[in-house]
Length: 481
Image (cartoon, rainbow, N blue to C red; front, side, top):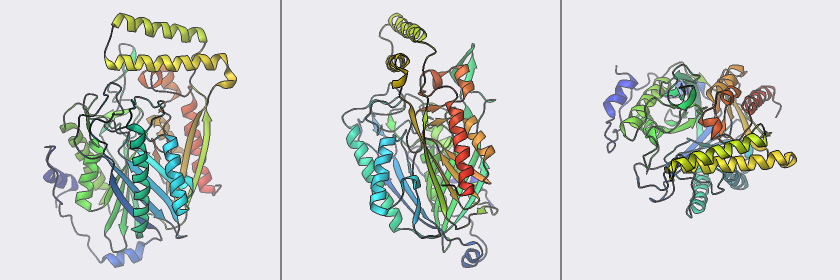
């Protein structure tokens, strides 16, 4: 009998213009109804998907020097998964999208409209971005990292909200009784990227660095055994085509999603994990990279999906907690040191002349960051804290989901999982907002792009986020909502 990996290899061509035909899967032995009578839960689920591809020429997010898109390789998607528990009411709305990030004020708009239409509480609405670097921004505030906005950004953001709210309604209308099972595996698509080279931390490959290789899979089937949804949780930056690729694409999560969906018939979701310091094992402006990574991940997912030992989730209530905390902002040790850094940046820029777009962008970004920091040092009472919205949900006693609004480092996510009182825990980054990087205190001491360029919070606040997520998990167990 062919393995899932062999079937994937047989059914997919690395040619970017070709996609696999639907492959026949091995039929389960035994009567479907009998299996459901044995393990059927009281959950109901509904799913939907819509296209959110912007128009060609729109701005791109994720790399600082690509101003506009030149084409569309494949469509970007938004998806909605809704779950109802024993109460019969909608207890979880999970929106996943092929975007770099979704800022908090956009999440608030979605939650407000979903709450008004279907009486769903804000803490039960999750908006997760894949952290896709080949998409347009929906943040027109001007504060997002590596995002250049144009006159189309606000209208695209409004369009995105409208599509998502419509998808939630469609998923609710299609909901049906279901069986939910959960399993874990491993995947090797990512590598820690904080490489020490010539005494400095650079973006490279650090095979010995912390990384979460776990792959977590939710399998949701309808009452008659028909596949409804597969939720895939893994941690890896969505950057496999490198910084020069300027077409819209869903990158390797899109390849994985389409492959798994074509082979199982289930709507397939990708949920990004703690990937702040994790890049793909291969990168560059060739479609073979996302194809390779997507196929690898799909084979890993299908190996878990077809495991007869998947854990059944009890159809009890879905508990939910939302906790907003204020994190201390990053500040230089002193105003004098801030001015020294400003002079250093300006001097380097002057020597470099016009430079390339990347250098100019980051010089301007860092100068604005230092200018704000000097103001905060002079007027400490006016220093603006970084609002961090955390969420936790439990599905029965077996599985918990906790989320953070940013690029959480692997070590922090692993710490939360290790301390979790639940048998299985999903730690989702890039969810319900974006505060950019959430590094470890060690990373601040080591330096590197994530802390020098892409971080808004003070050293030690990453550990505080992890501790708060652990407390949320404990409160979910105790029912202290």
